[in-house]
Length: 149
Image (tube, rainbow, N blue to C red; front, side, top):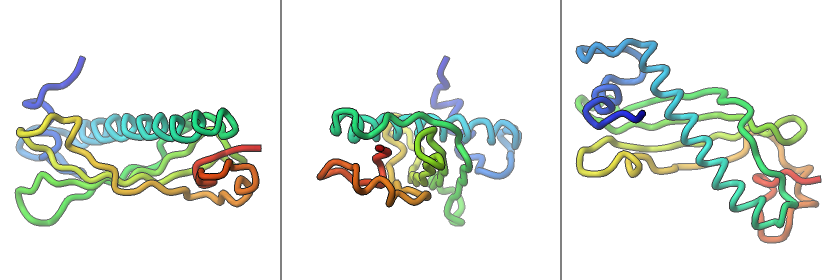
């Protein structure tokens, strides 16, 4: 099933590191943020595959998620703010060594917008070297996101 706004907002408001008066435990917060982070990483990988694998007619390999390496949740020190920033490092199963990426998201939970609009991509970049793929990446595509032979 899915969570309703009344269930999600207290968890998001509780903060990344500790539970609070909502009764949300640190373990529940970790599980919540890891599941949400993995969801956004999978969506990002799907977008990368559409933009690179499909656009290159298969020259660029289809990415698969190998693991979510790290997730960092931060929020402004200003009290009461529901604004958050997520920094996610993930590894795909392609590349030698497997390619790693960093994804940043910025978001704010509000009752005025549906949850799918809370998060916006800030940046996406490769953490591993991609020079070996420069010569085989089709013109017009970035070798940073194309694993090819």
